[in-house]
Length: 459
Ligand code: SAM
Ligand code: SF4
Image (tube, rainbow, N blue to C red; front, side, top):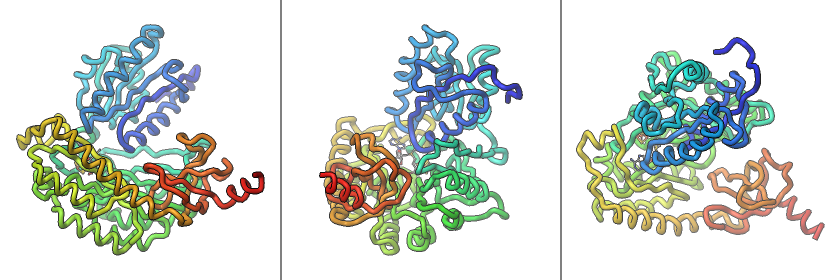
């Protein structure tokens, strides 16, 4: 890294796609590059360095890379000094091929290369285009420590506890792009949470591809996920704790008990099921059956009756029959999730499904019909679930101004439901009690006692 102070500040613009892991990676890029003299640019037009951070989980996500790069081609013609780098999972997987496909790219880099970004910029400044896709060995992998930036600390912050994944879900590209699972030492996790809370964060979400398989580092640090949750819960000043994502295979009753036992743990669980059919789950190599999954849900509801649940669903998996699909619909009705993310299956390179010769054989129109059926059913369930809040007073952690409803504030309940309500901007970062007066789509409409009083006095 440069020891010389930079001659002039330069500007960085990041176009990010994908999951929370990518959001987290972008923050690390900003930090690494800030040390090298880069500040955030408000738009690509004024940037000296543009990073496109990619996602390859689904085909549609991958297609966005080319169109994003296309937008920057003209810009680079006007200002040839601008550098364009492509990072993330597509860059890891496609490396050199991506350079050929996207001439505007100066270099591509995988997620493990983020700490080396300054050296990669030097390398490009001194030579030709290249792909940097080396993966760090598990033993050598070090997590970058996140530093809260004064004045920019979010009310809700992400803290990573793990990278990569050791599972073999047949549809999934993540193990191929992010490599073997590495757990972060618990002290680093607790220190980072402590720093963020001291700097003003109120809610922390612990992130990883399969947080339940967290195992610390070696025998001396051999915590399991439930123990890590208890350690984070004890951080003074922390008001709310969440985690994502869980794999049902590793989701134990001990982890579920934390919903009852921990002061800060929110009553919200994202537990991806993918399919309601045991036959499909087996062919997805998910290592649990429909019944086992339903027993886990039953247990979680027994320790935390008011919990809000969400899940991921894939429709049109290779060989999925009408009756398999009907089981997915019936599972949605049985569990009654508060919200779901649903996707049409898309074949991905280097996934176990290809090695198992599971061909993408459900016609596109059938996939589209099934997706529609899932979303229509869930819309009704979500509306029913949201309506249980109407008339109740709920605790809301205020995140700030609502992007959707100008002049209103937005915040979330413990169950992760978004609430919009009128109130003074000074409430941002505070936990307030809000009376829920209506449900609107996927969100709730609230009334803050103090604001309602003020309004009636003014009125
Ligand atoms: N680690 C998480 C887990 O175990 O559930 C999931 C990570 S993945 C980034 C997020 C979601 O994308 C998955 O839960 C799955 O529903 C969806 N997904 C992954 N691969 C897919 C594929 N090939 N086609 C469609 N959806 C896919
Ligand atoms: Fe992919 Fe399965 Fe790992 Fe989730 S648990 S990242 S779906 S392989």
